[in-house]
Image (tube, rainbow, N blue to C red; front, side):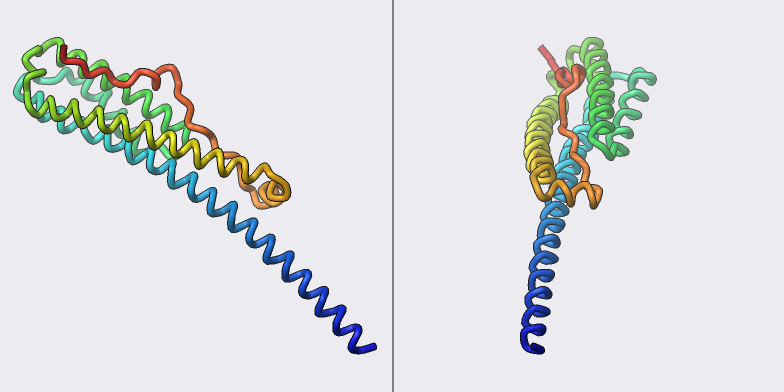
Length: 190
């Protein structure tokens, strides 16, 4: 009788251990996917910051041409600051929209006032760098949305959906273009 009770106890303990390990695996998988989403969001922010950091290069290339209009320059500087402070997808989108608008206004004003600027080597390099950065931003958004989709699907499937709600795993927002984000800052020198 003691032997049979011991076997039942060991079997119950073994089942509990298997269930606990399965739950730990599910939880760890969700944590891993959540971290992938955060990493992808960080990559978008880094690329947006890279674009914002190109502006001092632009400033140095136009320095010999103009004393910049202070209000426009201030708008660009504040927009750059907003990009670095953004922490959520919504904040990132809003900061990017603001920066796009400020860059467009400022670049267009400067290039209209100083048409010779388009022949400046530094300015041409800036244009190339900006185009490359826009491509990186587009790829980072695509990668983010793929990782966010994988995470969102993961936390909605049974039985993970139960544990996701128990442990506070929430749906990741997708990076969606707004009307303002649809238009890349126009840097045309033709």
